[in-house]
Image (cartoon, rainbow, N blue to C red; front, top):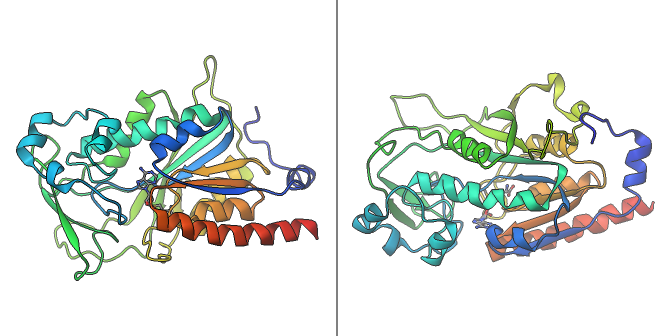
Length: 324
Ligand SMILES: C[S@@+](CC[C@H](N)C(=O)[O-])C[C@H]1O[C@@H](n2cnc3c(N)ncnc32)[C@H](O)[C@@H]1O
């Protein structure tokens, strides 16, 4: 398959003759990945929940996972996401960061089956400083002080030391490599308008990672769809994009300028883009805008409803444009 094959105007036109489709499914990405036909997706692009930030209004078994003696007995090696979920655990609120890395890699590895051999997976993820007791709010750590919050407790030990930057993005990327994914880029997203922090003994964290993974072929070197001409000017692996304002009570929305080049470089015109943690549906909107079909998963029913209403409007508009 083509590595850097720019879409010519004629291929663009041909591919967008059939109207793109959009669908949003409600549920856990862990289950929904299994429902997809094999080799049906061109691009998986997402920003999953980060460790220890927010609960998105989803239920979590605080009593069980805040019980430090029980959690200590289980230890930092996760019994697996299925076990965790069965005990009422929510992705991102694991008592150990080690469990989170394991669960996220376990879930996203399921994308391998539905991703085409020529496909790509782009994962945006930020880091967390360790704190034995963290405040969790629906909107995240920076949420309003008056907002209801929970205390997430975590046993100390190993990397779990107060104030330690956990390097969660790197640990996650290594876990994916160990599962056989090929890492092609670690794009640094520099956020010039990152929120100021009160800490006086360190610099403010103003970047996140955007990893580009592809599938390892059974023989030879990885070869996948890629149109380098659609990347940012100078095709650098550091991109500067302001954090986007939240939408409909969701405070972690993808900035358009961050994902547009990823969608254009890594999915062919007319291809299918999946966001398995789709939130406000921003990636699906950008995919549709560029003539790709879009599929989203989200565990939060309110977000699913919001996306359906918004995206059906976008789809009608897009279909009208194609007819003109
Ligand atoms: C960081 S947000 C995604 C924001 C999105 N990129 C946007 O632009 O709006 C993560 C989303 O994952 C959803 N979520 C959390 N756990 C999930 C799971 N196990 N399966 C599917 N969605 C989940 C949350 O409801 C939330 O909307």
